[in-house]
Image (cartoon, rainbow, N blue to C red; front, top):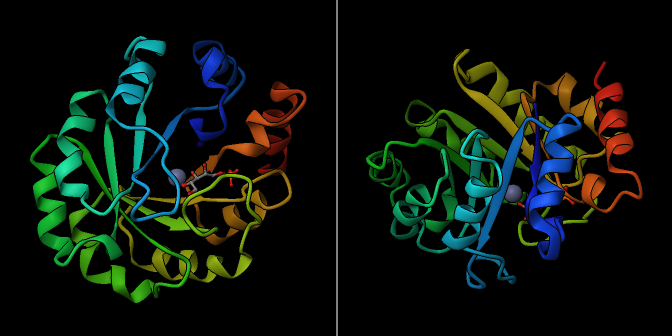
Length: 214
Ligand code: DX5
Ligand code: ZN
């Protein structure tokens, strides 16, 4: 599945952008919440999550990626605004198992993720707590960065350990050239921002990613 990351959407015509990518083959939306503290960028919070829900009539899965220092604090407002999943960074909390359980109380899917520099082993004790494991293939904070192919080793290790009902997601630098290696490594969900939203022809860009996955 392809998740369109709205970080690269044009917020002046947000509804049209979202409608365009969903009607041309993106499966759901990926929402990058950044607090300017965990990462050196500020993006948006619950009001844009709510806007995403309204723009899609509540019919599209909203996958929230929290790049914030206090994910447990913000999970509730983001779920209430319409997110179906909350993925948090293992580096942001002292006790990731407790954090996952707290977040689950909001009735959402729970995901765990890690910065490129964090070892994949850090995630192993958490795998029983989550539905989603997100591998960052760029440094979190900005769209438009170059894919780090060495992160696929993490995907391969995770693939041996996840259950069939869990999803491996990859985020950062995914485009028609990098998607195939990620697919072969075992990725289920592909987050794409700039390769779609910054393309001169978005339907063609989505089609070329889909084509590369065949
Ligand atoms: C980066 C975000 C990504 C970002 C991906 O911190 O988590 O979701 O939007 O952007 P691209 O696809 O341009 O690398
Ligand atoms: Zn993301």
